[in-house]
Image (tube, rainbow over all chains, first blue to last red; front, top):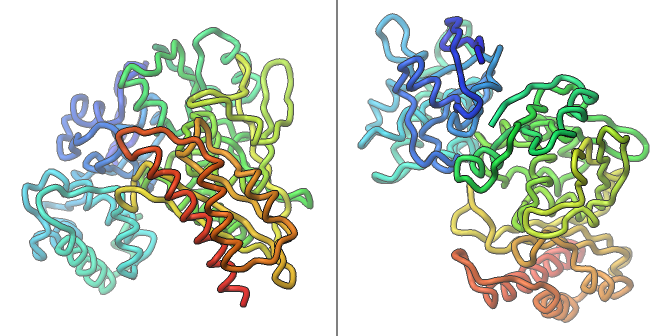
Length: 162
Length: 281
């Protein structure tokens, strides 16, 4: 069946099979390979994208259900060749090791900061609870999100689209 | 496997009357089962855009929650969180932020996992279900819904329409604790949810639900009966814990042994009561 969806602000029309996941459409159909498949069961969060502004595991979303939906992936964050402040904060805080989990963490952080610009540490941890890093730990990731929140808080709010 | 999106309940009921048709809401349980080959539906009937299954309505009888309302929407309602703090606490521990964006109470119940977190809060609140099909609708207490792991009272072609909680009781103390390997995204080794009403130190009503310790989520009716009318003290809390250990029928699996699950259940029930005792004195 054909579905129409908006991906990173661009209208797309794709042919999907009933069993295809949103993850398959993004990676194989649209070649947006920044979204990663880790566990394929919703446990690791590497495939996190925003669906109508909410974080979701794209491995657990049936593509056919996405007709008419608005999807934001990691590729949609940078503007005009400049990293998004959340991405910059991850780089500056050294919150990246192998990098496989990073797109998912960044997307979860993005959903958090759109809804809660000045989150407590507890709110950050709750927002990231569905993302797993297997290289090291979470201290630098936590500090990256704090840094991003501070950075975004000083920006003109109109620049930060939901 | 085919996919069909419906936008009305008559169309849903019609679609589900076909052999092999299964409702799909958030998909967070069902799609994992489909990919693992554990579930082989012939037709996925997408209910996520049936507006009448996504409602949230209050009346003097209580709160009615549409079966296909995402948990994030339910948790986003401050009035629901205030009126039903046990439900909010339990749902915040269900899955992860990503899962709660899409998962629904109807799905949590119909999936009928013995470890279903959402079911525990709903059992403690004495939730009633409205089930519907082409033949009409019927009401069923949640306690009569679960029939075994993955098995429910849903007849062929029937779906969960809504979940109704009785009017809230602001004087109830509540308790929830899930024991697992980590806090987020964990399948419970054992979990206990409870509501307690005290008057002058005497237990007027106790409702205790336990998960992952029997073929279905269940209420510990014998423990509750023994508590009603008793003065709450430390000895009673310990005794209730001991009898809770006896009332459950856990299995040994990859997550924990049956003996450990019995011990944990007893400990959690005792902790529930001793916490309520401390708070009341």
